[in-house]
Amino acid sequence: MTTATILLQFGGGAGGFGSIVPMILIIVVFYFFMIRPQVKKQKDQKKYVEELKKGDKVVTTAGIHGRIADINDTTFLVEVDNGVKIRFDKASISLDASKALNTPVVTKS
Image (cartoon, rainbow, N blue to C red; front, top):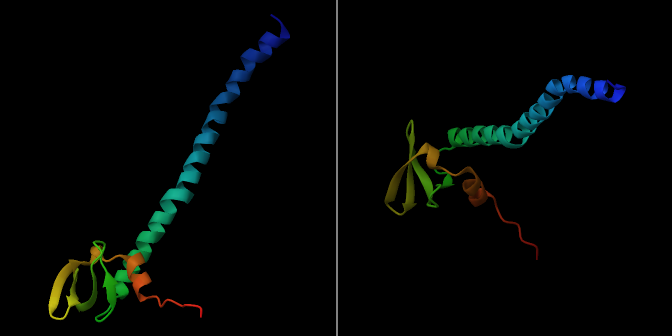
């Protein structure tokens, strides 16, 4: 046996740990770019819905605009027009669309 043959056979033993490191890195990257932002967004949505009160303007995930007329444990009664009220589940309130509705638009003159 030559020295080159011995070195080639011996080099295969370190591959076990070397193949695990890229998998761990993929999991870490997946966590920070996919899972963590989604969990943060869910917490923000839950906090926003809990802070809503009677009279706030909201937009549902279906795109219906209205003002909160009444709040129950799991639902909102949303007034969409004078005297027209629809009951929605609290999960149907869109955080992004509602915030955009309530944020004043500044125009430059």
